[in-house]
Image 1: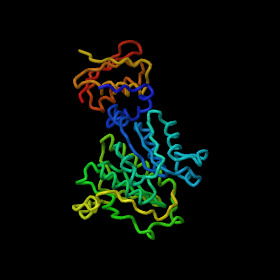
Image 2: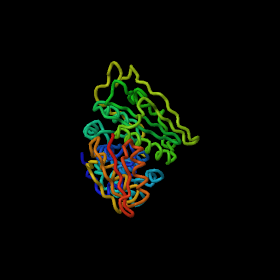
Image 3: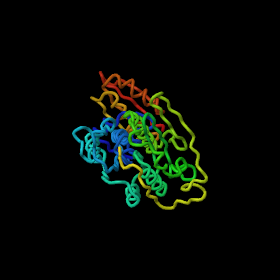
Image 4: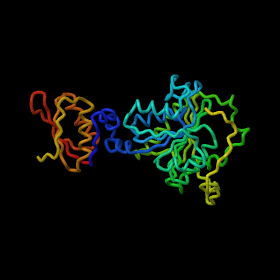
Amino acid sequence: MSFDFTEEQIKRYSRHIILPEVGGVGQKKLLNAKVLVIGAGGLGSPSLYYLAAAGVGTIGIVDFDVVDFSNLQRQILHNTSRVGVPKVESAKMTIEALNPDVKVIAYNEKIQKNNVLDIIKDYDIVLDGSDNFPTRFLINDACYFLGKPLVSAAILRFEGQLTVFDYRDKKNSPCYRCLFPEPPPPGMVPSCQEAGLLGVVGGIMGTLQANEALKLILEIGEPLVGKLLVFDALYTEFRTVRLRKDKKCNLCGEEQKIKELIEYEQACEIHF
Amino acid sequence: MEIDRELDLKGEVCPFTFVKSKLMIEQMKTGEVLRVILDYRPSVDNVPKSFQMEGQEVLAVNQIEDNLWEVLVRKVR
């Protein structure tokens, strides 16, 4: 076996290589890995930045928005001079400046029924950092059909949630629909005025998402499968709730009723 | 003793002395012996210590000249 690291790579990844759980073998796994991050916003910013710093060799980024001043309170991949620039372009610039080892593939488009499978199919792991339910259900169902591990995080106000659905092991892993069978009715979703967010919550949860992705690539530790981690920023508390597979789940249960992708209506068209 | 690979790390300092030694040993077969040449004094302590922590067998640490040392390590795992 030959690693063929350059001098620069040996220096760049030295703190990884020193770790018994990573080493040159693990660093090669990272450089050969392909990770897709959906949403280059509050969650995607830290997860993308850490994945790139870690040397994940191929990173796909999906987002159809442009950078807005209202994003800069938390979306640390972007900056003031990038306002008006597509988020995927801004993210690509920041990542490439950090680590030239990373090949960034930018998808400046909205995740929809007709493109989701095609975008996801070539990646090893998918990170959901999207900001709306129709997209979350599409990503979940697509990952389930394709058998891809999905690292799912969500943030609102002072709270964050994180879990991993490992669809390489459909028999044992619960799915997103075991947790949320259907999108909530429009009245249940926080209105735009209510949907405030302490920026750092995205930083914490997105970083934890990157951690789960790196563990999956390196095959170390225990992935957060079958557990939902809930973070409360006001009291600095983490709680872990067990997630059980729902036998009656329409997607992964005993009787699979959902056999194709479903495109739900978005209640509020304002995106974050 | 038969030496399978040799790594001349003169001019290198911590932690890169260990990083480079470890990368080399990862690419070797179990049972093979690596000889590392060091001229940075702290590495003469740190490289063997780090190898031991990783479960490799440190066979010898010898001073071979003024300011020049060799570390012999057998790959166990």
